[in-house]
Length: 85
Image (cartoon, rainbow, N blue to C red):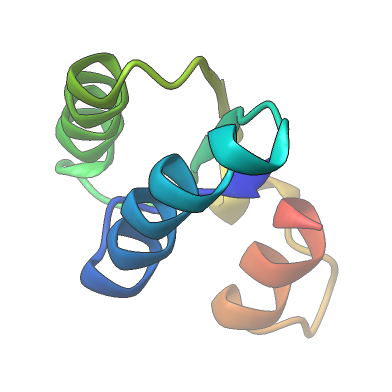
């Protein structure tokens, strides 16, 4: 299972794993968390799904409204990381 944000770093990792995994007999799945932070979060989740479909990598997408799940005094970034993990 590889975390896949859809950004350039995770895309490079995902593409590399599609190349090295099969010869090693490793299966590959991806996971994307839609943080629900901004209006583009759903689009990023759809883009991640399209990329994984094109690469033939099964993808699990979850959505969490991070702003609503923040602990008192917790930054948005810290809450995003906590919820993602």
